[in-house]
Every structure is written in C-alpha cells, then in structure tokens.
Length: 474
Image (cartoon, rainbow, N blue to C red; front, side, top):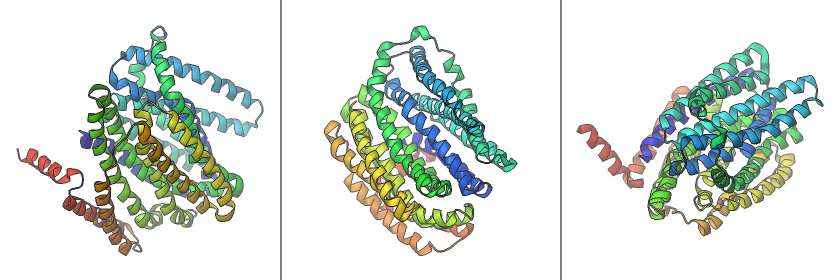
C-alpha cells in the first residue's frame, strides 16, 4: 500500500516537477534576475504568512481526521470558523498599510494577498485529500495547479506584465483547482457545529507547530531576503532559481513519500498501537532515504547539464555553482521535516520542534550575516546547509527521547553503497552536454542504482518485484 500510494503521490509530484522545470526555463528567459528577485521575494512572503499563520490547521487536520472521532460536518465547520478568525486581522492590517504606500506598491500588496489566498486554499485542499487518503484527487489537484500556473504565469510575463504577471498567474493556478476540489465539502460548513473540543486539540497540537513553522520559514527564506538586502534583488533572483531547481526535485520526492505514509502511521498508532506504527515507519524510512539520497548525488552531478539546457543565460553560472550546495541543503531540510522531527508530532510534543526551529533560525541568521558579505550566494547556500544539518542532528538527539523511531542502519549503508556506484558512473559522464547525454546520464545512473539495490535486496525489493511479477502472471 505504501509503495502504491507513494507512486501516485510521486506522479502527482513528478508532473508538477516537470512543469516547474519548464517554468524555470521559461521564467529565466522572460524575466531579468531583478524581476525574478521581486517575484521570489513576494512569493516567499506570501508563503511565509501561510506557513506561519494558517498551515497549522491543515497539519492538525491530517493528524486528527484519520481517527474518525469527529464527523466531517463538525470538522469542516470548526476549520471554517478558525480560518475566518485568522483572516480578519490580516485584512485589517493590509487595509491600513495600503494608506501609507505608493500606488505601485499597492498593486504588489494586492497580488500578494491574492497569492496568500491561493496558498491557503491550495494547502487546505491538498491536506484534506491526504487526510482522506485520496491520492488520486490529490494528484489531480496539484497537477492542475502546476499546468495552470505555468500557462497563465508565462503568458502574462510574455505579454510584458513581468513579475506581477507571474504572481497573478501562480495565484490563479492555485485558486481554481482548489475551489473546484473543496467547494463540495465547504457546503457542509455550519458555524453552529463549531466544536470547542476539536479546536482545543488543534490548538494544543498546532500552536507549537505554528511557532516552529514561523522559525523554520525564517531559516528557509532569510537567505533570499538577506541577499536582497546585502547584494541586491538580482542576486536574490539568481539564488532563488538554484534553490527552486533543487526544491522542485529532491523535496518533491521526499514530500510524496511522506504524504503517502504519514496518515497511515498516525492511523496505525491510534488504532493498532506503537509497535505496528513503528514497523510501518521503518519501511517509510527506507523508502524516503532510498529515493532522496541518490537524487541529491544525481542532481549535483547531472545538474550542470540540466542548467545548460533549460536555464536562461544570465542565471547559468550562479545556478551551476550553487546546485551541489542547495541540493544537499534541501535534502537535510527534508530529512528534518519528514523524518527526524516526526517523533515530536507522533508523541504530541511539538514544543520540541519549536525549540529546535528557534535555535536553527538564530544560527541561520548569524551564518547568513557572516557569510553573505564574504561569499555572496555561495555563502547563503553554505549557511542554509549548515543550519539544516544542525536541525537534523538536534532532531535525532532530542526526538528519540519523546518517541523513539527506527533508523535502518543496514539499509542506509546499502543505499549509500548503491549511490556511490551510481555516483562514480555519473562523475565520469558529468562533462557531457545535450539532451541525448542527459538521457544517457539519467538511464545509466538509475539503472546502476536499481541493479545494486536489487542485488543487496534493500528493503526487501526482491520479494516485492517477484510478488508483482507473480500477480501479473496470474
């Protein structure tokens, strides 16, 4: 079941990932680094607000929905009341700010608010489908978003709307599919069904997460803002392209596996107990690391060819330089969020995540302040990498005290060996350029990894393949 659902979620991430690669190619040819810098600063600001103010609600929904304690009507009504309560202060502040800024800035403020609405509705829709264990609906929603965002954003940018065109296109791309997918369940909204008991659970579970999300986002986006402050918007734009390239591949893979596994881990924990949940968790860990570790090495070695093929000329040198650093940083970010910090959520002790996030935010700000003036974009990437490595280490040390989770030492060693063999092959092919060579690099690297994984029987892959083949024969 985990592999099947992961495959569906992976498809739901691969197609948007391909759209994201296409978008990076299109955007870096249509926009100057300065324009892309403006876009990424507003985009990350809207994402920051969604993550820190609203995101704890859908995360709490994923935690409590699978248990079936509350009816759908009660759950959605409670969520609606809480969303309304959180939205009112933002609207009031935005209206006040509009009186004190220039007319051009008001346009960007409005675009940012619409983009925030898109983030909120999109995130709720995705997490709802994940909580309901409906990977097909999840896939339709996220694929629709990626296609619409690319089509609308690139069209508006081509027509001369610049960064504003991207913002409007991405916002519309999120809003349209999410409204279509969630309108039916929002029709069940009834304020009289609001549940104080469910609210208390969501608040107790979610407030520490909200605070930790805030601090995580400080660590995640401070590099771009500090680059813009210390080196200019163009440098932030170039850096963002490299970061997005890594995030749209490595984090996509890790997120897909987590989306498939986490609701089931929670359900097993609530219904069958800790032992059953941990057994499933071990399988999850092997799959998570078995896909993400080779992805980091592969992107670092094949990345220069990808950059040469799809990224605009003004961005190529900086993105090629950054890619190994940001790829590794994104991996450690995912390893923390999707692995080492899960014990705090499973143990209902999210204050642990908050404390780690606070320490990492401070460390990241200090490292960025020290390294960016000396090393520019590379300094920002190194600061981010070191910060997330420390985050994983702290999660490993303190998480095991809350809810010990398995770390498959044998399987990780096998994954590293398979990745090493794959990496040697890709290293020998790294200087070749062109689409044909990219196909050769991809197929040869993937084939070597899969063969060595099969020979080592990582995660029982031999039995899995034989069972699948046996079913087909029948």
